[in-house]
Image (cartoon, each protein chain N blue to C red):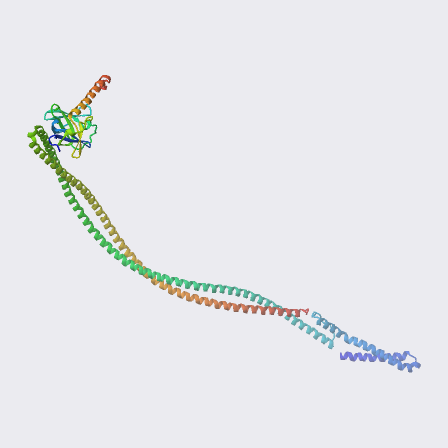
Amino acid sequence: MQLKLALAFLLVAASSIVANLLVNFLIPARDYAVFNMVGVVCTDTLIGLAAAYFLSRYFTRHLKTLASASQVIAEGDLSRRVRVESDDEVGDLSRAFNAMLENLIKVVREVSATARTIFDSAQALSATAEEMNASTQEISSTVQNIAQGAETQASMVSKTSEITRNLAKSIGEIATKARLVNEQATDSGYKAKQGGEFATLAMEKISEVAERIQGARNAVEGFRTRALEINKIVEFITSIAQQTHLLALNAAIEAARAGEQGRGFAVVAEEVGKLAENAKGFADQISELAGRINSESANVIGSMTESTRAAREGREVVLEANRTLEDIVKSVLSTVERVQEISALTQGQTKGAEELVRAIEEISKIAEDNAAGTQEASAATQQQTAAMQELSASAQAMARTSDTLKELVSVFRV
Amino acid sequence: MSNQGASEVTLEFTLGRERYAMPASAVQEVTEIIALQRVPKAPPVIAGLVDVRGRVITLLDLERVFGLEHETEGAPVALILAPPDAHLGLLVHGQPQVGRLDLSAAGAAEGLIDGVLLASDKLYNIVSPRRILAFCEKQVLEVFRRAAVDDRTIPTGRQA
């Protein structure tokens, strides 16, 4: 450049000299003096101006290129390159300028790429955060459901515990009652056995009564026979009395017929008649009594026959009662056995129920712990949700920032 | 019995609810009826035939005579009538009694009754064999007459 400048100045100086000489040559001498003075100044000025104009044109043409390139670059177009093929400082500047552009492009590209990557990452992060947030919310609601379920479970277990305790109590009462039933059944069995013995005794007594009734019946039959015999005799007596009466009547008739002589005979006849009458009256009374004895004996015999039959039936009934009582004894013994079995089973049940109560109490504790744990988990998921929301917000903010960066970088065309 | 001299011995018996009395002199004896033999086609007043110590006595049913239908209680007895009617007897029930009544004090006769007598607060229908026998005779004759008419007009079925 310095060399070029020196050469330029040298050229200007040489052209000035040539111009002076040329002017001296062309212009006549007369004029020369005046002219010489004016001519030289004018020529030199003209030459100087031309030299200045061309030299400046020459030296600034590359700078203009650079300036326009800078202008383009300033507008963001980094694709432009400066073409200066000179070995001077402007050429160096141009090369340095191009190198700077290359580096700048690299930086812009990297920034752009990085911004894109950040944006993508932020987007992905945001999406992930949202997904996680959604998942966490789901987990949170699930955990809340579990927590509610755990609470319900705890209350149900509590109820179950109560029911089981009542059950255990009931089983205890059943056991007590089974013991009472056992005692009562044993007592009933003993009493039924006693009843059976009494029934046997009653049967014997009834048989005895039946035999006695039979004996009495035979005796009454004897009475009846005697009464019938009496009746026959009385009939005979009655007949005699009647005949006597008729005899007395006939005697009286005869006496009446005899008149006064028969009067004494008539009295006798009358007396005989009265006696016969009396005899007949008594015979009638006896007959009536005998008849009454007969009919009453028949009644007694009827009653006794009825009594014998009743006694026989009573014996059958008592026999049946005895059999029934034996059956009762058997069934009571069987009942006692069953009740004892029930008693044993209820004891087992009582133990089982107690164990069940303990187990349920443990379950209850676990359920309560579970409820507490799920509540904690719920709280934790809620915190996590909050964190995820924050993360999501940050990722979105980052995405926005990277967007801004991308916009900034997008000014550059590379 | 207030007038001892006028009273006479009577035989008293019952027919239905009424008391009857007959003079003892009209009766020969009183007997039991052992085997009464019914008489076919006889009028209802003829009770039947009975054997009294070898004599056949025709018994007249006094209940039928007085229009009664076996209403009297007691065993049947025969009042054998005194001669001349000793072949006839009156059948009554129960036990006849011997008594004394003033038969002259009896009221007026009516139908088969000789009279009614009140004695010792008891009312007696006084009867005598005469009216009874006359009534029975009429009955028997009527039966005989009817039998004779039947024999003439109605041929017996046995001949056909």
